[in-house]
Length: 166
Image 1: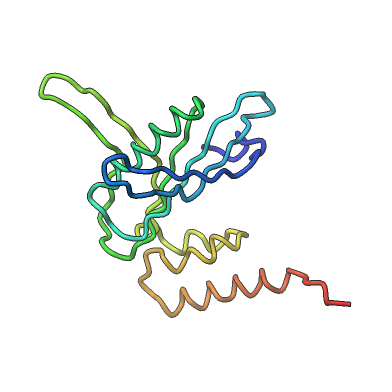
Image 2: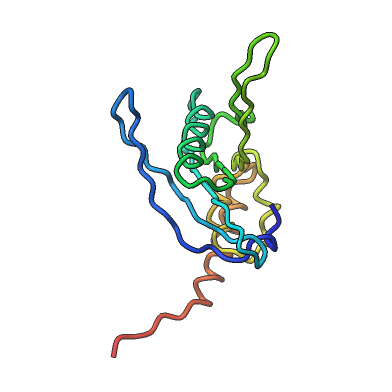
């Protein structure tokens, strides 16, 4: 999704779902209603951070998607940020229900797997979030990466001004 597509986020929303079989409550990490290119058309962006690998994660994303779609009846753009260190193999980005002769469902979500990204690709980004996330990316030269990351963060901190109390 290109950044110029988004016009504005109207607001962040808090969503808590209760699993009807276990009674366990699940809270969505980030949900925002967004306007599409100066139009009256809205959609939801759903972002989940996953800090550990879990075999049923794609199924959980589908359940969140289905509940949000039922509640809001808006298009949903699901995104996952995988922030764990190991394993480095690519995580699944879909949930399927199939039979040998019939595909019932194929749900997909966008995934950003930090441990498969090179921190060097983010050095030119003028974004404090990118600088902070570099520590979770694929690191071969950790001392050099830490120096660069700290340098970027210090640069951002110097540009912030904090008013002194009167």
